[in-house]
Image (cartoon, rainbow, N blue to C red):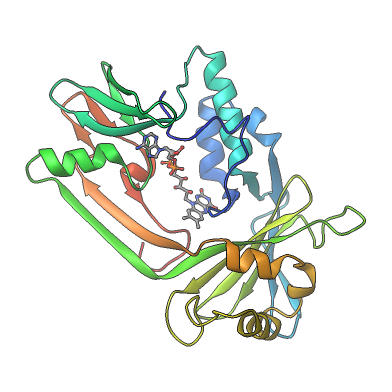
Length: 284
Ligand SMILES: Cc1cc2nc3c(=O)[nH]c(=O)nc-3n(C[C@H](O)[C@H](O)[C@H](O)COP(=O)(O)OP(=O)(O)OC[C@H]3O[C@@H](n4cnc5c(N)ncnc54)[C@H](O)[C@@H]3O)c2cc1C
């Protein structure tokens, strides 16, 4: 297995992409089928319902399912670390800092460049599984080198930014950790998912342009005025809001579709490389 990034188990995951994700029944079924659900449960926190925070700081609760049912907050880093440990136990060798540049489709070779040494390596495999995400280098190769390859990329008007609610000074969760918290505000929203370290990772889904947008909130004063009005009960829980807001990137949200997902019996696109969708939209 070749991975562009360094080993997460010895390097901290970078901010920018939400450091946790919601795992639901469909995800658990996949993990159960490959026999690793129990290991993943160790880094997962159950969220039995959603707590909605209105603009007057009133909260309401909606359960996600029947007794005992929940969706789970899982750390991306924690999940990846568990998956890598388990893969290595099965004999998989992982090469880090290796960025796939291109694929030689005819030979079934992938060409990697090492970030540290800049050394290029051409690797042959009987089957290449490209799981290199929405910006897949392997998919680009299919676009460049095959006839009638279908591809579309559609960006939303909204992007997202990671913010944080740390543990209280007493070391507790600042809100109920058994729920996914949502501050729905029509054309934008803030959400918060609990982490094992008793913090919450918040994600602001927000338009890039317009009256209420990332581009409009370009000073501390404008941002704080807006947040205090829109998310009055969240702001006191966010001591690092100013730094988080201005230092964390506003990331784009896009939908990618393509077809076919394979090339002869040599290459298969898997995951976001084949089909990237956005977490919540009416477009897909
Ligand atoms: C804001 C947001 C919130 C989301 N929330 C959820 C959620 O709550 N629940 C959920 O199930 N899904 C969620 N998703 C979707 C989910 O994150 C993706 O579907 C999932 O991460 C796709 O996994 P993947 O392995 O295909 O790609 P990725 O997670 O993108 O992983 C790709 C891997 O390939 C590596 N890589 C990339 N390019 C190269 C290269 N050229 N050479 C070598 N390695 C490379 C990367 O470093 C990375 O390790 C969310 C997505 C977004 C944007």
